Length: 171
Image 1: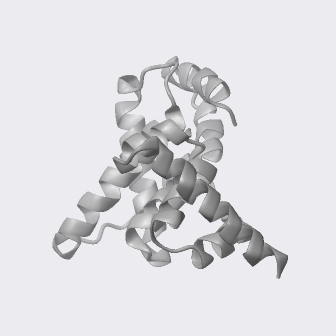
Image 2: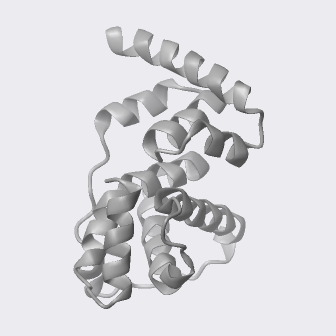
């Protein structure tokens, strides 16, 4: 889903169309999933963090500026939430979820197995570049800003990542 399409659904959601949230969720789930996976590397806790991310997005949807990159915005929300949750994990109190959880978010969407295979195969910064460029759909410039590196370094890492993936998927 493009940023423009997401912005349309966000406007609808802001104006009270609850169904629009389903489109927002489906259009961004994979970005959120892999952003959290990069931080936690724990598939068991990912769904909890995803739910927390969307609850935070619902609460703060008015702070999103239409016309910017929603996938980058929601990925940053997921990133910050997962990092903070990892820091305070030992202090968390288990909370039983209400039956409305599935109604709000719908059933969990299965991640793409090719993407999982690529993530399992890549290491370090190549994996991070893959997540930002391929999964989150960020530009090279946005990726460089997030990773706080020179844009030329991202171009180089992208090229190396593509070489690695070609070797992996030819097997």
